[in-house]
Structures are given as structure tokens and as C-alpha cells.
Length: 537
Ligand code: G6P
Ligand code: ZN
Image 1 (spheres, helix red, strand yellow):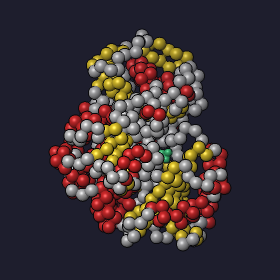
Image 2 (image 1 turned 90 degrees about the horizontal axis):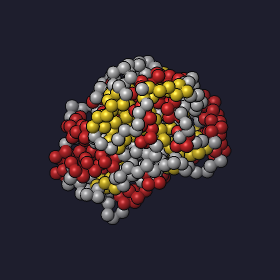
Image 3 (image 1 turned 30 degrees about the vertical axis):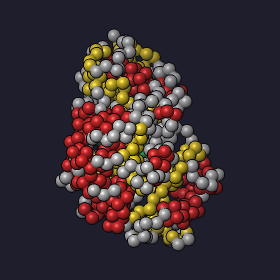
Image 4 (image 1 turned 180 degrees about the horizontal axis):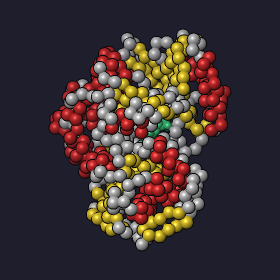
């Protein structure tokens, strides 16, 4: 039986860069999750008889929202609802499952790298049939629907057992609980040379950050690839991620960083975030920036069986350094520069224009799914190290000797009052026309603009995607406001300096002048009242 529940709209259900993210206490309001899930289903077409995938990163509220979503999906006409056992599916595994099962789409329950727990964050994201995040056209329609919704419908049924594989009927829908790891592990085994990785006998520390990648890493790294037991740390998904930020950067994965800089460092240190789509790669005494990682993976991807025929193109988000562009140039393949947000890569991948994509925000991936993929990046690194016999450090040095080095850092100012952050950006945008030719120390501004992107596959235009200040000699500053925060605004300032010859210098020292110019140009201290960033990555 399907029951109708009267409701009223919530004004704040606008999906951000990556779905709807709010505090758990916001999501816990009666009708809040229900309204959003119903709005998704009200907007998408073709539900009758279709398959839907549901899973999440295991954070607080995951199981409760899955139960609700199953009942609403069953009432909406889906014939089959595929759910990861225990409510678990990493974002890339969900993307894979959507594609594999030819599903209409999937609901991924996660707030990615944001902390979890009763006082922290929850999120819901809808992915479409190609396995990628819904494009703006759909998320805008979902938002419009949330503003008008007055009823949600659910099959009147009890909670189902999420922990046992098999099928259950909920109304007219069959709910299928599946192993969250098996299909994903099989895909990785097809892409990478597992015997070569095994034979290389590398040592590694993988920090799953008490988040979703634990079960995947245990199976793939320790069981399939024979890394020593204990290689995977914090490998059990916890609803509050052990009270930590499941964000694999130098601040939140500090213990891993310290290990890798110390005398007992294994060959490779790696970590992934809450929902398993981000990655951090650290060699012995060598941190690899995500921008460099993209370039190095692209330059060597042909060493892995899944990419032996070469790459069709390389795509990066605008704030990501231009290191990958130099690789594309040498390979004679196109380089694409998109706005921040993985969804912009989907069209390029679907059209066969690009094979590998990456972002400065620790996301790298390829056309094997339509999301970025943390473990995939780790496995491609392992495959390349095994095939070349090089250490991470050696590979990085050789890369810079060939291509030059893009020194790079991101400065984040978190929890800034929205009005002040908006004022900073508005003032900056107002000044753009006056900047070309201006000098800041030794730096001369060549061009300054507000990045706009025209999608080469459908001609859609996305404007105001971040302010770019380009200096003579390829140094660059980018300013943008984060699209993923849940309170206040985060100002991100991306600093980059290219050097063809001087490739072994200290990053902070190399970027000092550019950082000073950033403050002078944007008035960061004046607007935010902060004299230093909260996070430097
Ligand atoms: C999410 C998206 C990424 C994007 C990142 C940017 O992780 O999946 O594609 O790069 O957010 O976040 P920001 O906070 O800079 O908007
Ligand atoms: Zn994530």
C-alpha cells in the first residue's frame, strides 16, 4: 500500500557542488530527507520498471535515510532497488554499479570529506544513468521542485534487513542487497596489472580514515594484492569517522604524513576520504600535490593494461595547476579546463574526448566510472611504480626534469562571514579590467578574468567560476568561494608558479611573493580580518 504524506517545502534544499549537504540536525527534521528524495523522483523521468542504486559512506543517518529512500523509490515506480550491504557503497563503486546494472540512476548518501556524527554533516546526491553526478539542469529542477512540494509518497512497509545479501519485496519493487566491494574489485583487476603489483613487493600504509574505503582497501590491497595485514589503517567505517575529518589532506591525514616523512616510512602512503572518491599520495619523504599526481598519472598511464592504448585527452578543473597541460601537449592530445566539480568531466568522458581527469581538491579518475576514484588513483600509482621500478620521489623528480615544475599551494580561509566573502569577490571582479599591466613585486599581470566555461559537447555555458589572475611567465592566482561548505563561506586562494629549470626548491619559499600579491590584489586581510589561512594544502 502506498501512503501519501502531506508536507510543506523547506526553502534551503538547493544542491551545491556535489548534492545537498546539511547538518544532521537539519536533515533530522520531519519530512526533510523525504521532501528531497521525493523531489528527485518527481523530476526524473523513466522510473516505471527501472533500476535504482542506493548506498552511502556509512555516516550518521545513513541507514535511516536509506530505509526511507527505499520506501519512496518503491512508491515512485522503480522495479528494482540495488543497495550496498550495510548501506555501504563508495561513490566510485556506486557509479560503477549504476553503469553495470544499467540503472536509471542512484542515490549516494554522503557529505564526502565533511565530518559525520549527530552534530556534523549529512548529504544526498543523485547520479544519472552514466554513473555521474546529475547535471545542473537536473539539480536546478530538483531545487525548483523542493520549493513547491506538498506531498511525498511511500510504500507502507517495515525497515528491511540491510545486512544480509538477497532480495526482499517492498510494495511492487524488489530490493536487492549486494556485496558493495565485489564488482568494484573486479573492475580494478581488469584495469591494473595485479600480478606485477604483487611481484613488486612494495610496502604501503593506506589510511581509510574510518570511512567507506576500509572494506574496499582490505579486500583489494590486503586480500587480492597481498600487502601485509595492517597495511590498511582505520579500516572500519564509523558513523562519526572516529571524530575526525575524513579529508585526506596534510592537515587531517597528519599521522600518515608524519609516518611518510619519518625513518619508518613504507614505499607508499595513501589515504581516501569519507565516500572514497578523493586520494592522497605520499612517497617516502615526498608529498605529491594532486595537480602533480594528475600529470604524473597521465604521463605514465599507458603502463597499466586498462590504458595501454594511450589517452584520448586530459581534463582538469580550472584551479588545478597546468602541469597536466604540459603532458597533454607532449602526448599530442587535447587538454580541457573545466569549472570546479566532477560533473563537468562527465560530458567529456561520455563523448570520448578525455580519458583521465583530475582536480586540485584531491580527485583523480578516468572513464572507467563517472566519478573521481580514490582507490583507482592509488592502484594506478602502484601499477606505475611496479612497472618502472622507481620510487615515488624518483618518479616525481624525473617528471619535473622532463616537464618543469608547477609549484602549487591552496590557501583556505574557512568560516568567513558570507557577506564579507561576497564583498571580497565583488570588489575583485570590479577591478579585473584595471589589473592587466599592474606590477606586484616582480610580477606583472598579463590577464585577469572571471572564468566562464562553454561545454564543448552541448554548448552549455557556466559563468562566474572563479577569478584568474595570470602573470607573465605562467605564474597564476585563482580566487573562488567553496561550493561545498555547510556554514559560512570558505575563500580558496590557489597559488601557482611554473619553473622549467629550478625544480628542487621549497614550495612555500617559491610561492611567497605570489601569496603576498594575492593579498594585495584581493584585500584578504582587510575583508576577512584574517592574517593567515586556516588550511594550506
Ligand atoms: C567536491 C566535488 C569536487 C570538487 C570539490 C570542490 O569534492 O566532488 O569535484 O572539486 O567538491 O570543492 P569546493 O569546496 O572547492 O567547491
Ligand atoms: Zn568525496
